[in-house]
Image (cartoon, rainbow over all chains, first blue to last red; front, side, top):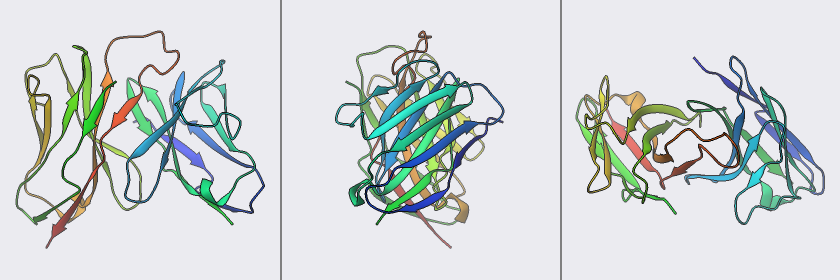
Length: 112
Length: 121
């Protein structure tokens, strides 16, 4: 089956620092990856679509300069939360598209 | 814009019984896909079942089946012989069909609000 990994699974950082989250498709190439944010007991909110070799497409209301996305290869996309603040604390999920979307296990970010 | 609505924030079922989760959607597209995803306490999203809009036959995966009513834009999930492991949050999702160039936001999913399913032993 198609496996997507995320690293780290959880991270705690201080306010004002930057955090990078990696999303990898382990056994397939993904030209498109997606980044979601999820609050407890709520739905997934699409933040951006990441395309290999081109700029990410951000959803309305998502700050491009705060959430930097880089799709460096067909198996790796990264999300960097810059100058993180407590309100950025959330669960971040990536997915990679191969006919359908396969989801990573998520990353819990806590900003102190 | 496409919207997906799940009107049941929470549902409960007795083990071995049957439960149906509701989902409605709104779209002007004729080619699309519908999905049910399960998110257990681990928070790993798991694909439960998928339905192509052009197929009249309802999709079935073991104990999981859907009732796809295209004209009514309804897509409910039936879980038969419920098991304790079925306890999770369930999301209905929509994706536009076609084979785009892969750029921009092609292939993105629109999710419903989710339904928390509790299974009682």
